[in-house]
Image (tube, rainbow, N blue to C red; front, side, top):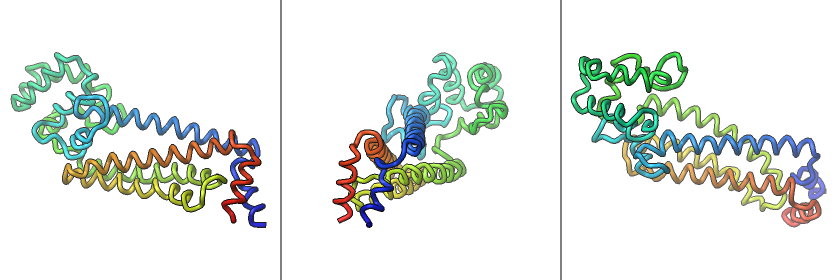
Length: 256
C-alpha cells in the first residue's frame, strides 16, 4: 500500500497537464537563472576591468578598491562600455585633481554626465542607482571606494533571501516527487540551496569587513547553482524521458 501510494505521486506518473505546468515553470526559472548569471557578469564580473567573475571582482564590489574612488572603479570596470574612452579619462582626471565643483563644469564633466550617464542615473529612470543630476552625489562617488554600503547590502540581502527562497521552494517541491533519487540524497539536495543562500548572503557582509571572505561568495553561489541544475535535470528527465516502468521499479526499490 505504501509503494502504490508513492507511485501515484511520482513525476513520471503525473498527467500531461501537470507535467506541462511543472515544465513551464522549470523552463522559465532556468531562463531567469541564466539571465541572473549574465547580470552578475555586468554588475560584478567587470569590477576588475576583465570579463569573468573572480575573487578580485567580489573584493572590489563589497570591500571596495580602497586605493581609488567608486566612480573610477566603475569607469574602469562595469561602466567601461557606457562612455567613450576620452570621456572616461576626463572624468577620472577630474577625480584625480580633487573632484572640485568648479572644475566639474569647467572641464565639461557635467556635459559628459548628461550625455552618457543621466539616462540611467536620474530620478526619472526608476533604477536603484545614484542620482547624477546632483553634483553632491557625483562628488560622493569620487571619494575613496569602500565598496557596497551597509544600507545597499541590507536592501539587496532581504530581496535575495525572499525571492530566491520562493524559487527554490517550488523547484524543490517538484523535485521532491522524483522517484529515482534516494530519500536522504533528495532531502540533502533540497535543503542545500537554503544553507548556501545563507552562506552567500552572510559572505557579502563578511567581505565588506574583510576581503578574505570573498571566496565564500563564490562557494555559496556555485553550490546553489549546482543544486538547482541537479534538481532541474532530474525533474525534467523523470517527467519526459524515464520510462514509467523504470520509474515504478526504482520507487519500489527505494521504498523497501
